[in-house]
Image 1 (cartoon, rainbow, N blue to C red):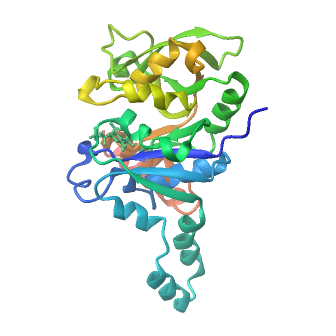
Image 2 (cartoon, helix red, strand yellow):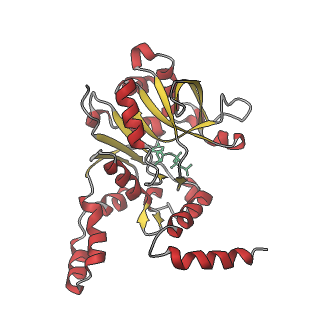
Image 3 (cartoon, rainbow, N blue to C red):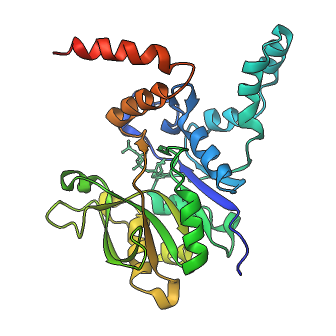
Length: 297
Ligand code: UTP
């Protein structure tokens, strides 16, 4: 039996141009989803799956991110004086959540380049990658399933989700073969952001990966691809086609709730969907939303 995976890498160094000007001085991963920054949901997911060692890949404006997971003694003292223990707990929670480390990406040369920055910290063991702007609903655990599959198959694992063919150009798309498990496929090829006509399937890669450390060697020679960025998908394409050397790639098909907070429309939907289910907001939001919908005609 191999040692359990303990490390998660969260890339959060993208420019977030779709969210300008909100992301001019703040990473998009810090945008609030109801009352928590998106990245806190992602760290909570990592910890819930048993990964307490979290490495964040940061870019410009990293301070807002680091401050969020750090102590804020002045604020804590004020809440303490007021006896507001509920809010004090909320403030402290992100500080004690995980063992968080940071490394700078420098120039945002692509997701593959961001992941390569984790090489020193991760070393020679499998690890998870969770995109900091992609939220998986805590009620639909995905990462735990992926970690189990990694242990079983000793391959790299990607998360795949069926999307409408008209949307596949926004994602990496996978060519797959069935396995004896209906929720697990063997990935035979990957294409980053293909046109609907060129896509090998409508199975899109979403922002969760469990990777073998061989990915670092592959990323070191991966050339810039789509958008002139070093693409993680291109490195995984090489791994999918060289299973003897790199362990190959399998996909876990996810059928649960996912919110892409890096996209403005999905971000709005995420806030409504998550708030509706909350005990403190749902009971008032639901009737308001129903009334509002009737005004739309
Ligand atoms: P995206 O492509 O969604 O991020 O990357 P982006 O480039 O910031 O977005 P737009 O299109 O300009 O709005 C997916 C994830 O990879 C990280 C991002 O922070 C995000 O979590 N990323 C991307 C990096 O860390 N470094 C990069 O060079 C690129």
